[in-house]
Length: 248
Image 1 (cartoon, rainbow, N blue to C red):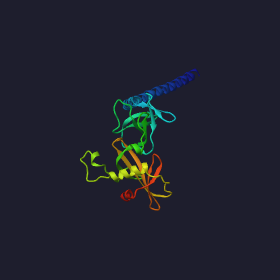
Image 2: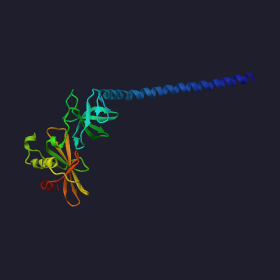
Image 3: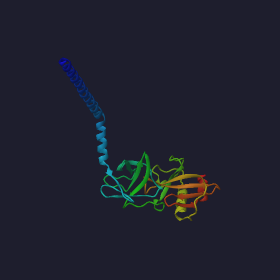
Image 4: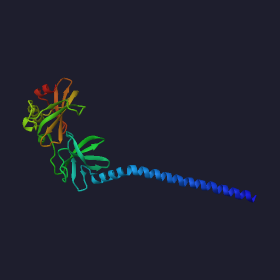
């Protein structure tokens, strides 16, 4: 009886030891795997941490964003768009706010930045002491013309030779750009079309703000009447006939 009990005790101890050894072995294997995984990904994680630590941390207030140095950024009207970005300036949570190409000077708080979310450029913001941008002060000289649902231009209003660095072209669309500017800044405001049949986006470009577009809409209603719309102000005017012919 005694031998049987001792045998049972030994069997139990053996089983417990085997379980303990298995747990230890499992912990060792998991540790080795974790070390191997860390050795593969840790350098990238460190780089990512260093990169994010170098960016300005933005905070959202009621009507503006503020960076770590107290610089305030206010949203511009929705006609203003960034042409291209030039690296990340700061983060608001996981959302990036980028420098704008041609408008980035090292060591100086950027005058204009753009929201960049889900690989899409969004709202452009201005530093508190930077100029607000309207069509009146944008001073456009040329434009990219796009379908309403496509960012890729299918036509252009070419700038006068004085603005071109390639010696100029045989084409000059200055009069059409001036028509748009004059119609929307001095023309009589009308009601928007009730039933819009088609629309184009005219993405005006300026030497004053080389990294930005100012987008206006050319729209035609069911009766064939054409309008121009400044998205920033919400103003609609009748489109000049000559411009309607050029865009139709």
